[in-house]
Amino acid sequence: SAPTGFEPPPPDIRPVAGGLAEDEARGIDLDDDRLSPHLRAALEVLVRGRNAADVWELRSYALVHAGYLPGDLLVVDLGIAPKAGNVVCAQHYAWASASAETIFRIFEPPYLIAAGIDRELRRPLVVDGERVIIKGVVTEMIRPA
Image 1 (cartoon, rainbow, N blue to C red):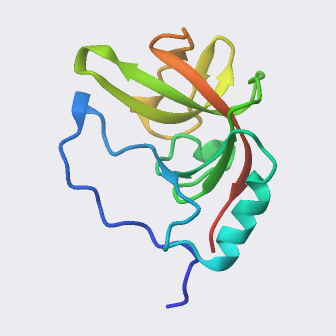
Image 2 (cartoon, rainbow, N blue to C red; image 1 turned 60 degrees about the vertical axis):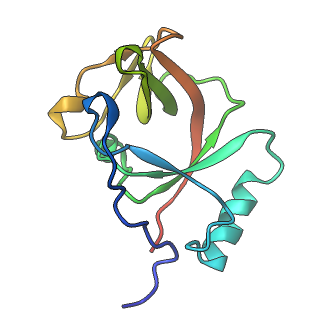
């Protein structure tokens, strides 16, 4: 088969804290050998000149009805203040189990909401600055071929 530009890693076989399912997203290192040269170049252009921008691979269907699919690469700008309707990257902390999860949701102040088919994700999360903290705003998306 033809190369896709990005080969996903093998499944992570480790216990998951707090009963959370597979991580919703995975941070991408632009030096990762699995990135094709063309994809790496495109991502470098998107983050160039920004003080704080990260690239994440979406691994959930939490935003499928907003047009985002598992495998999409999302550029998150940590320096942009979120506005209503923005897709954001957030940290969801479960203090009882000492775990944190990176999630992607739509910001509808003061809530984060999913736009997917998974019933487990339908419950809105209140952005309270303690249990749920917005880290940045999604500014671009690349869907590797």
